[in-house]
Image (cartoon, rainbow, N blue to C red; front, side, top):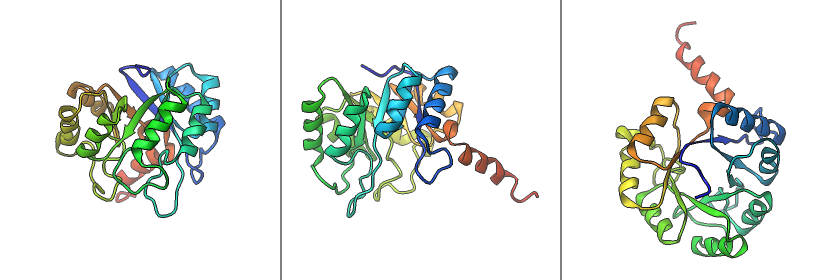
Length: 225
């Protein structure tokens, strides 16, 4: 496996966010590495190339891009696959939900990636148990809970609802390594995910989005000032 059994930090900032910059994301990844992270998840070919200049950690690469008439935006087509292969990332993550796709069906996109980059591992970003099982049959190397709560059929749900009930079900439903991702907000939650048996856990906004972190602090005192 190219990914370690450890903490992976997601270093992403979209165009509308204050820290949107490949340079800034590379430094964010460096800070995460110095703090003990053993892997990085990053968005876009440009960010990944800059991050690789700063850290010697395996990277889960994605490209977020919106397509008309499709809810799939994480590595949705072969165009994004090509960009990620060029970036040199060790793992490519893609939307593996049942949502309508803009180009190839999921099976074809997996086959395309395997043909173009047989040494790159694949991570399935899923939202349901059924999607996890389909992804396993398609040969994904890792199953990630990334999109639980973000698809039409899981909207509003949280990975940690009911004491991580969904994560427990995923761990029972598939044999491939499971990566917990999605609103892991505290060190305690990170520890809990490993106690349940995940292979690795991705933490993003709780570490790398200072705007959101600040907002949570401000929210706690909004009725006091």
